[in-house]
Amino acid sequence: MNLSDNVRRLQNIAAMLPGRLNDIAKKATERAVEKAAELTPPTQNDLRGTNTRTGEMKQHWATDSDTNPQKRGKDFVSRLANDKEYASYVNDGHRMDRHFVPGLYINPYSGMLEYAPGADVGIVVGTKTAYVPGLFMVDEAKNVYQETVQTESAKLEELFR
Image 1 (tube, helix red, strand yellow):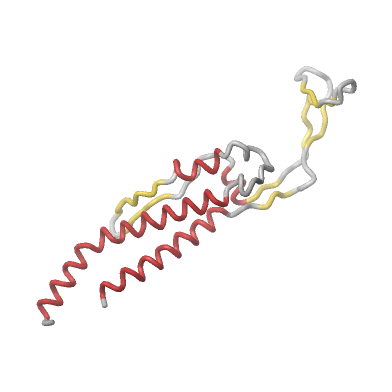
Image 2 (image 1 turned 90 degrees about the horizontal axis):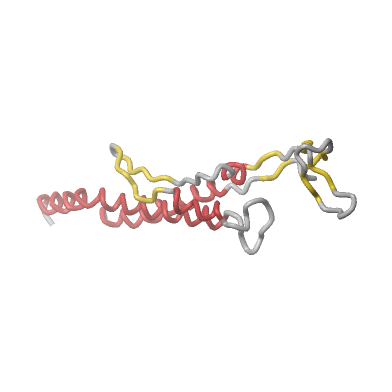
């Protein structure tokens, strides 16, 4: 192989490189979205906590993320996102404070919890747990993204050998 053959080979590689990098970014973002959804409640029939029965937050990883990379300068930019207002609390953890709720009371006849906004009663509600630890779905998704990029980039390096 002479010098002009090597130049042509490298020019062909350079021409296909942006498309391959785009494919790598897309695949890595798709894997990250899958990982974030996998770790989001409900998981393995665990339905504890608010809003876990609907699975709404889990579904929003796919609908709110942008897995098609956009080229910005020399970078390919994609987005892992979840627009549910409580997603950051589930991801990062949060405090649970006990607080007084006016109008909330336990009916002495039925034993049921009832709410009467105008009543001159109320009770303190809260949780035994002062802090709910986060699930860190985004961190795990980022790790999967980086692992996928490294694996796919190693395959791409084969072209230069």
